[in-house]
Image (cartoon, rainbow, N blue to C red; front, side):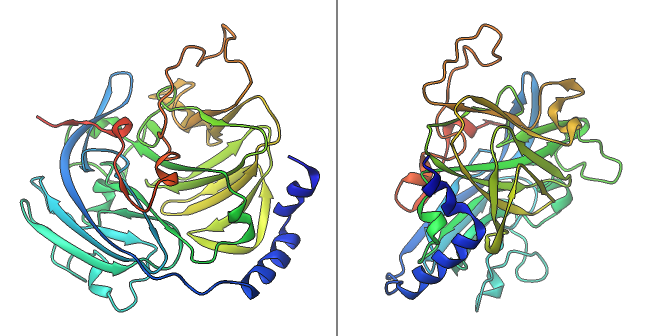
Length: 350
């Protein structure tokens, strides 16, 4: 990427450009309307190798389907509980102006959804940003270790100049799993639990997928911490901007190569792909790069540049079968809607 384009991502230039853009902003587009259906299912997923986990999965997958809409859209979601336990959905980060009963907290905003029942949520998609949805019943178990979460992305009516430069967009939902409770639904998520498997989008390395880019791309990484552990994501070979926190634009983005993500937090990183090669991406809490204590696992992936050979015999992923859309990078290019992902599907629990 040229030096002139690279300078766009500098914080001072970003603020100046943003001011100019807001002054010339077009009138808001008319709101759209969407109706989606989600089921909650007893689903067994495989984290890595033979390590399985019983989840309460949205539409049978972990993470749940991507919901991608525009700021101000009217959203209706019909949720049917097919498990034997109660659940709700909290739309984490959405402000629910005038729709507080849709916030998804049992005993506060609604009764829990009983087995076999359906509850319909209706709200406006606001504010714009990177958000997520998750259960709010027994969050210590259902969210922290049963995979009840999915991405909810709201595009802004008036994107910043930096956002307009983005050419590739990736969702990375980091999780942690205590294998002691893997096949014991209804238990776990208690003090003293030891998380010994760590995942991106429900998979531990080497079952994750590479992130494929080409030189000149401006890449957006949407990071989520879904469990009760802290993550510290480090990207080799690049400096990125920490540009958004919890869906909200930072007035002074921070240049970094490592970002700390606490439970429930989201960070959007913007990175210029200007250094061709193969580069590691990993959690710098080093125990999170193990599978039950075995090194080279957990929260790890690689950035693979187009045109850089993957034929080295010693390269871990030399013969890896690439599965596109593992990070919802293809779905985020499609028209607004809800998108399931076959790469993230599990099997119905017996």
